[in-house]
Amino acid sequence: MMREISRTALSVGLMRALHRSVDVEPWVVDDPVSPRLFGDELRAELADDPAWRQDAYGNAMRGYVLVRSAFAEDRLRAAVARGVRQAVVLGAGFDTFAYRQPPWMSGAVVYEVDAAPTQTEKRRLLARAGIPEPANVRYVPIDFETTALGTGLAAAGFDLAAPAFFSWLGVLPYLTRDAIDAVFAFVAALPPQSEIAFTFAPHDRSEVLARRVAEMGEPFRTTFDPAELRAYLRQAGFARIDFLTPEEARAYLGERRDELRIAPRLQIASAVLEASVNRGG
View: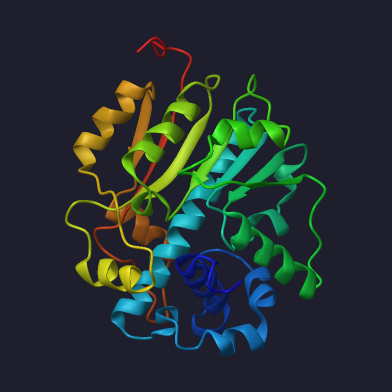
């Protein structure tokens, strides 16, 4: 089973779990669940994972993982405030938001979308740690390359007539362009006020990171030029497109008394559908 589970998803989950043990407050993401999910035994088993690195590169990658999660959770809170009640975590991996939901998520439904082996392992770890699965969580096991997102979500009770928020972190670079296009097209066809927060790899991506993920058996497949990506999203039907600036990203870290930093060149963005958009193109 471990050979079938996404190694990059494990690494990202481990980085979130390590935040509480190798960094100090202020917490970029207040996540007491990740350390419980992984536990001492599993962390020891994964001790050779690059996520453990405490050099400048490792600290920056952990910072990036935390900042993108904080950004997506902020965007979700804003979406809920404007009436969105469906939250979809694409490539959920070992993300723990659904298991530490704040009060403002009352009345919302969370759909976790991921490959079946990774999802099965996550649910096993949740049970082992005694972390309950909330009643408002739906699990959607699909492969983005072979199964239409709408098909999987519909089977889990997703309402196509209602707006939704999508979080798509650390996934795009590993997919083909066809699979990426299909997801953006699905979101763009939903009602106004729907939004997707996502990360992508620019053309001048980190070669160190590209080499490491390739060694894990999950090489980068797709990169984007930010300007071309903005034009692409507008053509798809998104009206408001925001790219997190380096200054905004660093602000998420707060005043640090540790070595946590933010990695350069790894992009974080969000795109919102608004009522004024011409949905025909």
